[in-house]
Image 1 (cartoon, rainbow, N blue to C red):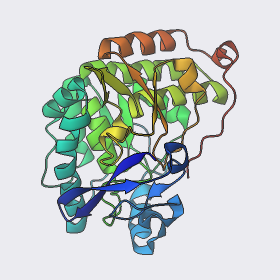
Image 2: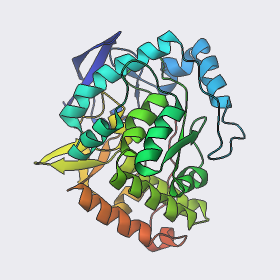
Image 3: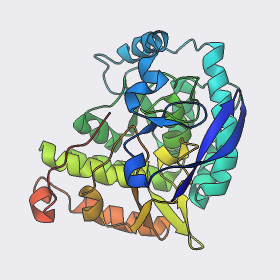
Image 4: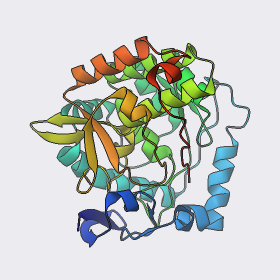
Length: 318
């Protein structure tokens, strides 16, 4: 039976725990719901079921209602508990990145200089990104419609949230949070080569009008910039932003299917936001990623769904 690493956290101290699980095709339907890595339905995660946490999360998310892309927005007065969660994740992800992330990501992480002591404000992150690659964060309240989310990237804006994952499960979140956006996309957008790929996706999105085409593009985005791998010295290494912000998932390849990147195959692969991914795609190098993704985006338009013969898929956001 496949074995997968799971994690336990006690404040800022994190240790590995080994646990037998069913194969990844079953595990992906569940979510880590406790500090020791126990799996369960996403609605049992404390971030979904704790009323006090939900009030805080929803209040911060509500700030995004009516937000215009690129417009200024208020900072957050984070609590000490929220800063403590940040410190626990920062301490855990550093060694995890060195063990499981690709060279380009490690270099970008050093350039990003993510602080360890407290949650940075979006304005701090944006100032550093703008100086390096011309990108900036713009406010989101959660999952953003494809047309807005992908299209904004052509113009150098990445939609990011301000709320923090639940402190009871600091090393995994079933939805994007400020830690995911900073440790994942903040690192990416510190690297000029990766930032150019975001703009390519944005340019392709802005050439399309149909929901079907945008959905295909979003799946290719998902399996590259969110969950992509680069094979280095025969070993799959993470570069996707979702992997970079998930301590338990970044190196959990046992029982997972890893395939060479084929954008058409990636576009035909369903995904689940709140669980581990059973199928990932890898490229040979960052140059290979640029070639494959660049060629795909250059030819992408509203007829891509018919031309690629990609079936309509439902995406599980649970």
